[in-house]
Image 1 (tube, rainbow, N blue to C red):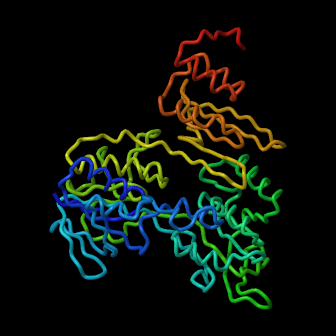
Image 2 (image 1 turned 90 degrees about the vertical axis):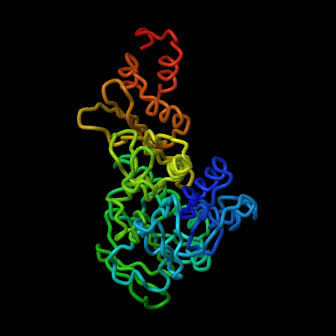
Image 3 (image 1 turned 180 degrees about the vertical axis):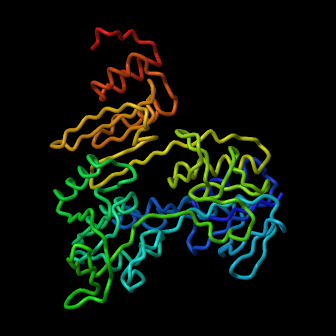
Length: 422
């Protein structure tokens, strides 16, 4: 059996290891288009502040990990999937046949339509090569403009600050991390960063990036009429699935590759996993792309099992994000924005940078977001994932959302709480 995996990120690497365990005699080829060994993009911020070296970003630490498992690594870029011929074409001109194919090419950065975005000194923060360029330019005192305060931007924000740069953050939305935090909590994160000495400009758009005058290498023009001089501009305005090369493949795609509950595409011999897969969403029952590493790892394991003939069902991934922004931990889970017919409650302590928002449908917790309350993260995920009926504990949580642990224990271990507890 010839297994070909396109993409050497967490989904692809997990799939290779799973395939080798399940089928010791199969042929496995892992294709990646970067020169480095497979690495985690989520480790790049730690590399930027010298907490780890490049080796520390690698997904597998032993130098012979792939060789010792008879996994062929191929550095090339797939330009076309020929499903009718069961082969892939690559930029080098080579053609590689497969029996089962896994598409795990992940995401690629969105390039915002800003004149000058391709200028020298403007970089994404997505690859190790990007990180090397940032390290070279982000010296102490260097003026840095970070475009985007979403999840990716907020991850690297702290690294840039710790490098001693003069950092300005420009976000088009009215708050930070708008896809995981509401206006209250997103603006609490902004106030936290401002207290740490950063300039955070929300509801602001970059109009152009031009060669600078005076001491600045770049001139960043904002829609409020102001200009920021910078030695380095970093674009972190989001990512989207890397599926361009599938245009003529015949594989059904939407936002990502459409897959069933076995992560199988419209072609029975082709699977998809990770950021590129439009898989089952646990909370909605629909299909969506969840560009987070835990989902990628889960997808890779399940897809590989099915490729090897060991039927495994994907029961849906929970949307979850946990973010550390200069020491302030924020998290969001499931349907954190709520549903039309649901109920919600919140705790808001602006002075202590504490926030908790719970979203309910009937007597079940379906989503939550929190700020500065790390002790609740595991319980929140457990309550959502188990769809645990809260019964008479729902009104108690509506009055005091911090009693999550009590609610969980009372409904899982039948502890004798009663109405008098209120």
